[in-house]
Image 1: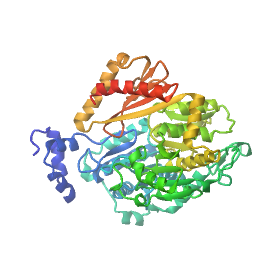
Image 2 (image 1 turned 90 degrees about the horizontal axis):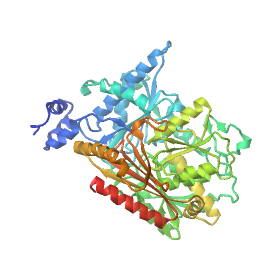
Image 3 (image 1 turned 180 degrees about the vertical axis):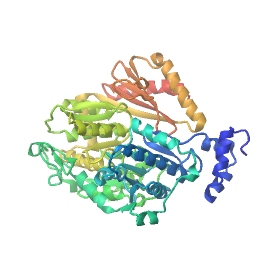
Image 4 (image 1 turned 90 degrees about the vertical axis):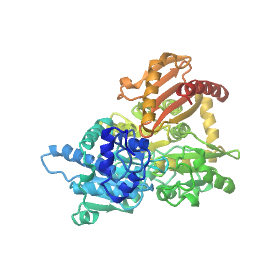
Length: 585
């Protein structure tokens, strides 16, 4: 069955047959040599979102042994990092998980490894959103955090995100050190673990209950623009910091928001948003999609629990059409991304991540007077409408590499130096943050503010689509789109690498009317080196190409600027045809 495979892969496969009965049974049932090779030709690697992969037995899969190995590496990293202090440091790590299959078990495995290493572990006793974990790390004074999730990926995936002591996903410098420690762990079966009951007796394990969620929601409410919900005028509190968290500056609204007049249909897509988002939307007339309210890692009602895709919101939109709701909101399983559909003239229109971000920038900056240090942070593959709006309101704009960890790292830098003030950050992939209660994207605060701005414009007799069209009229038309080409396995990884080589070699002639080519692998614009190419056209449009850091995909981002939608559509289709033919799709 394994003849013809490299000896190193055969040795790995054979060693895993002795791990446990379930693993042995799964591996022996595989009859394809290619499948065995894919499971063992490499170890899972950290990318823009940490460790992520298909669940199953093997070194290139998410399972309790790869989770143990990653956690042992993290433990060794923390132990080495804090050995430099003259006084002993009692290390602690918070561990959370979402509703995916095996998430609770993987979290328990991580806790067993941490406790065996002598590290106190705060283990959540129920599913929790990723931003709550980010919040909890700082709230509990931990040295790191772990959340078990594969975000919005299909049900066969799970993942493992690591956070630093400031609640930010590890940036490359720190991630590289963790990876080095992980790579030093060569015997998957010999990693020490401590039974959680014994760990509790030794005071190395402490469960995390509802008190963290309560504190998190209180911090989120500080960003509200509803009277009496926590917002204050900037001149009343020049530092606008309460309990350590940045406080919203209340928008000076010409029409009062009436939240109970806005009808919303919300779906958590079987994920962890069901409790916090439903609670944070309580001032509004909110209906829950009952069929998707029960946490379930099989995600039985959707092809993929991705709120970026309209079919994931199909049940919610159908319910909203029947009830006459004005807005549909959906969050992914770990509740760090939120999608929205708007009832505009009887038709529900799905907003893109760029459009939601631009509308949020518009809303949170209405009527504000900012100091020169006030800053909007976005990624290099996020379009420029929000940035254009922000600059028109007095914000500075900072671009980061792809991945919200880079936005979180900017917040940490601003708080250390005092040189800038973070106002809002977002990325085109439906991730947003307003406030500094977290260092990662937060669908809970985003859902609340999307609802508030929908209610605000409803009070003006407008939908969010009407407001978006006003922004286009003022700042120019922006059309954004995304193509993702899935190329799985070893052969797929090789094709992605070859495509990036081809695009670089032929960059000058790849597209017509290229004004500038930015190759971020060279470390340009003050950013770390990363595998991204960006083609800026003469009219200000741009196209960016990058391999995904978390999935076997190559992604193409389109940002087309034109006088109107018709002209933008023509340019988009022309560019797409050229690139699709190059990729072979």
